[in-house]
Image (cartoon, rainbow, N blue to C red; front, side):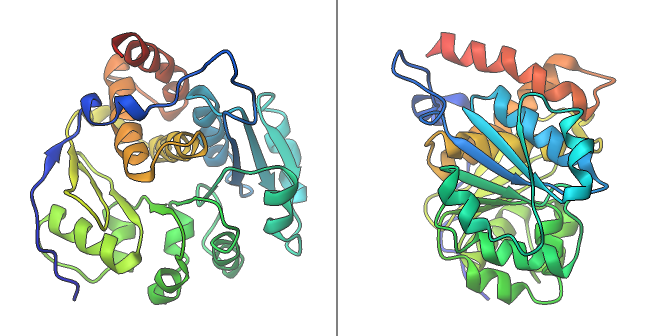
Length: 281
């Protein structure tokens, strides 16, 4: 088992990363603001749509959602703000990444647990751009997590909740220790979600996010978080900072709504939080 020498922890706050938050300038254009690629599934189309809207709301210049051809209409009818691209099982992701100048990729929300999801993840990890892996992209490796970990050779963030975490890592102990160990095992930045989310990497002290309200415990909110993370990365924010910033912004947006929150509310609530951060900086 991987041992972790230092377990000093830091409480997440905007002061930790606000200086690296992306900002618009007079020279900004859609490509400089990052192009996110989300691999969407069908019939669970809502998850990728939530992630795409969140990615646009926090500043991505473009979002492309690549989906099975028979699911295109379910996406196009609800996503005038994003590009919807038919994706055949035989279509190589590397061609999309190169031709469309993709800055970062998100896989997992609504994708389904399958051999195809597994192969898409392995393929994406070879594309040479930062990757965010969530939900089904993680669970698809439950039977062989070592295959996933051995394939992570570049910048990668994994965003499991406790159930997904337990399927990949045979670890006991306090949550902070497990997240830090998992970062070393998986060669990635780990966002271990929950009422207190832990952000851990192979370097430095883990961060504990404590501003999340109980109202976030509803379906789809994790998809929104994944969309925020991949957007910040696509805009050039370092991975660990992006994970910490996204987690705090996501929770702060939920706090502004209070009770009755559903995941569809969150992307537009992000606007007020981002504006306040820009003013304070």
